[in-house]
Image 1 (tube, rainbow, N blue to C red):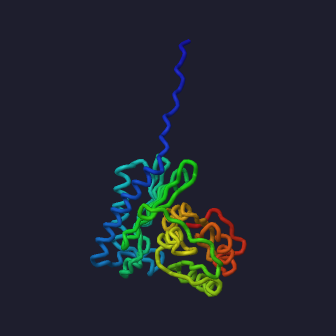
Image 2: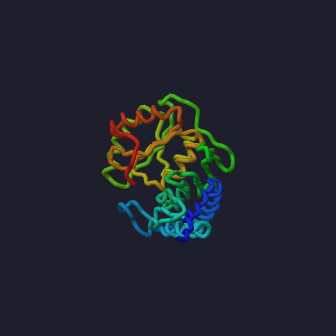
Image 3: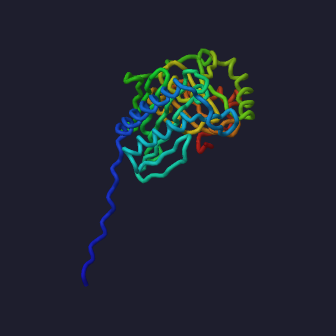
Length: 290
């Protein structure tokens, strides 16, 4: 009997380096921000609506996401893609790009200079690189995860860190409101109970920039229901790397609720969110609606 050759194992795909993914995210986010900035200088009009009549999308959103997809696929054609404005596509590399081409579209539409390009790279279900560009200011926030799980965050190349400890009554917290009127009512009622226990609340209009504000220490915390993964994926890595703790769970209105705060003050802020009614009393981290 002739001995048959043993089957050879399939070649293993190399594990992508988070630093390389971050370099691509940064270059792509900067190119996308240039396009958004160019469009902001012209006439910005609503191209369509999504969940409600006030949840708008502009042609700039669509064109910017198309640019991001093209630039990434040219370098990494086997990666998956999950963006706000286009269909989710699969891949074979284990890497998925999570993209919000313009986070803060209504600000962009109204000419309010608080909107961002957000790009995150996820590998094996974990976000390992993220870049957020404040388009109007030109500021770049970035972070990537080291092989040991640690991460470092920078703003324009300089390290950033969360604010030092403070009493809850002295903390400045950012939030946002849903486009859905029913959920907005739940949020408003909770806000009435929440406002007296903190220094004040800001509504800036870009979740990514709010969360990066926690990372750089210009805010003491952030909480909001109604987010999608693309709204916070990159920014939450930046915040975590700067010393924050964050969680995605299900809010009182049944939607994805995200809370971010310096690790040293996280538990107190989360409890205040429960007491105010942003979160149900029995809320736990886990699978959340998108």
